[in-house]
Image (tube, rainbow, N blue to C red; front, top):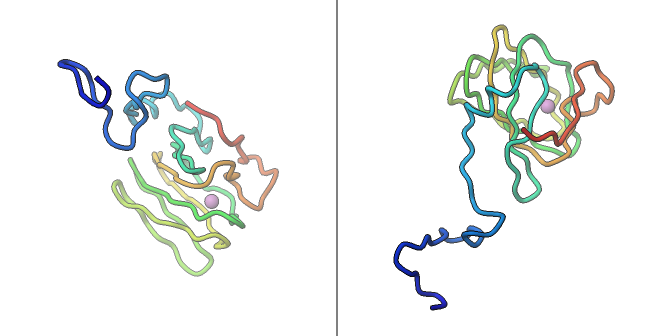
Length: 144
Ligand code: NI
């Protein structure tokens, strides 16, 4: 029966891992994951692929100025408002809006009220970038 689906069997979508393996494809509910986050400025990993990580973080207040030497960094706002400060301008983002900060560009996140943000960037990217030991520097690679 190789290559022929039996009645009632599940066919894995193209590109996914074989159905029934320990690596079966599962959906990730972002609201559920966010409900497990109780600290600000501590990104948690909810997925990874191709050496990149998808992280969720809750923000409130003002982050530290920093840049990432080797990583472009994507921010997608899920809830609330996020202002990204650059040395020459600021960009305000609302839910459903995203921005990609190129490597080497200094930036700072500011959220006057609580904001929920999805971050997409290479694994092992330090949240405070070139700032190694700030009080807001968080451990990387922490799953939730
Ligand atoms: Ni950054």
